[in-house]
Image (cartoon, rainbow, N blue to C red; front, side):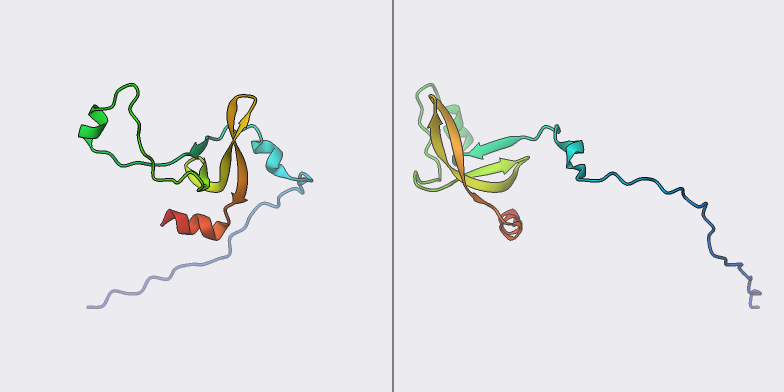
Length: 111
């Protein structure tokens, strides 16, 4: 025994007319200009065993995987955005940006 088909009423939705609101002119970038971001520079990386790490003491030297003439990675919230080189400014370390990473390079670096 087949069940009788139910008819369903379909209609277009009706929305209240919105009043014309003025769209702010200019760039909305000002809304986020004071949001703090974590900027870090990677001097190099090293993979060590727990035994090696437990043997560290004051004066230990850790060899990193970057060569001295290789560019350093500049990370914004953990994502590579640029590369640069170390500079000294009034006895403080700094970094001079040498290359802004393209969107394609950022995607390739994630993989």
